[in-house]
Image: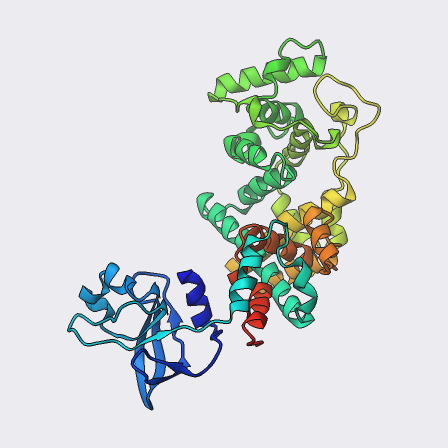
Length: 428
């Protein structure tokens, strides 16, 4: 409740400008101040006019006026600069540490505002505002989509910056970790990232001239060879022998096989295939970051990932079980996902870290070049009236759903703010 009152105060959503203190003085808010997220009064540097006299200072907000005493503010000098106490229930007078009374006002809010807020945060549906989206101006939604797209991109960039620091500025290592995670396509992303961290490039490069040894290292470290040690398949036997030798040589410990998810996923998404694809990029020396940066356009970037697996993996989705044909490693849609979740963030991160503005622009242009993702989140918003036109927009919708709708952070969502403002009869 107190957070909701802070929101009303911050955005000036009270019913009337005619506020009156508990002792009858007229109050006019010139500036609600800056919300304080740390200890101390709720708003700093506010400016209010009380009976024609202008006061500059802090604002404290409580549900009940008696909370001032309950929280010990009447004995805390940090609250002596409070110029106005804003409450929902006026059940006690308040004073500074000197005993001087502090002006107090009851915050008047439209009942419709509280009702709308409860409808949003209490709705038992994926999009709590779905039935009201039609009342939100198109410009508000468009501006919010742009902000969300950058918010999501920046969250990915922050993680890449951490990887960059962790791997001492080695962009190929960063690219390798990110590629592994991206090839998990959500289902096995965590497991593939763990595998890449457990099997670093410096180890793989020692044997990168042999595809067999690279595959043996990755599949063995993944813990996926242990249950196949007694298979009759000649290639599997080779993999097991190679890994046993290399594990002993480098004192390696494999992951637990239970880390991998196999249930209800398509054969082309089996972790064996994704690891074989990762091995393909490592074979001969991993230089994918350099190749990405040198690619002149989006078709050239797509071509980097239009890979056909040869040899054993041209006929297998898993170990030991042969299939008619399994050459194509990634579908066109999967390549788009790699460009969205790996290449665009790499462009943007490197551009920001090197002050290369054209590279950050290329990241945005790449996302605008790609068709919107086809998933449940995008479909849900489409049904509610917000259609994604490109990958930049679909990324924004994913950010909105996961970080605002699912957590019911309607107070921090521009769409939610618009609806609440309408309910308070203060459309901004």
